[in-house]
Length: 151
Image (cartoon, rainbow, N blue to C red; front, top):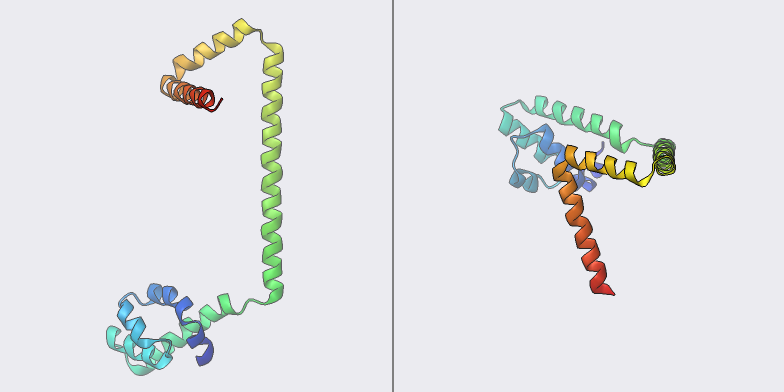
């Protein structure tokens, strides 16, 4: 990453730089202000490294960062976007299929059972899950009361 790109992307890089060099404070980053030589000097001072060692560290980290994020081509971005779209479509198909299966199961339950069997099943659910049943009941009462006020 050259000096101009480094200075132009300084604000974007600050979070990454903080994760690389935790001994540097926000004031240190403000003072460096996107100047690579100041950053090298700060790292040299805070970590007790030689100037060459600090320069090599900064150059290596920025090269890795540039290869990973700045180096994306339009083709890579398109490929990633397409893959994300395919993944989202696949998840939507799975969710729709699961919802359709649930509705089909509920429909067959209603067709097969009479009122007394459904009441017995409901009674069993309330016994098994009393707290959740209470919350659902309170929610239904709230919705019914709210609906009456609107009318």
